[in-house]
Length: 203
Image 1 (cartoon, rainbow, N blue to C red):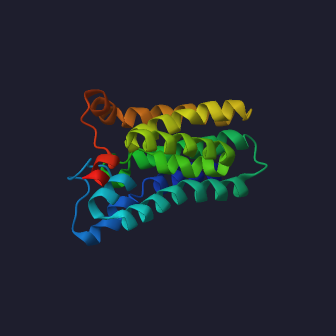
Image 2: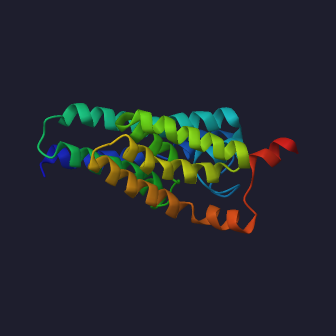
């Protein structure tokens, strides 16, 4: 592994680790790590600080997945093992978001960053995932359920679109990690205690 490749993987992790939700919400005086779901992602930011700040967090988390993949793809195109390198950088980006070195290896759930990664790698599949997400949230009101099934559907869309094996394996890793990070949400969904955006809107 040459120095450039190693720097790309490390750089991907460090960029993925930037906690935009925490940084953007600081001005409000709310510590999002101690309230709501205690997650640093866009959903908790929107719930605690407002929809505009939540949307900005979502955009930043998507871009920190998309832009590094775009840049590295152009920088290393033609290098031996190019696809494996790009897949490793994608895995590093999501790992950084989930286990941020800036937050003592705690972090978010990786959905928005994963969205950014596959927005570059497989935009058509992302459209399918977003449709599944929207349907789940629209029918149930649970963002977490939409995230779980939207991410899981990525595997199906990539398979149907005959994506190369390295993209499918990257998706398997990311989807597995997303589900692991949602273990508390899964528990609340099963027990009927998960917070619903629909109930909030009706109250």
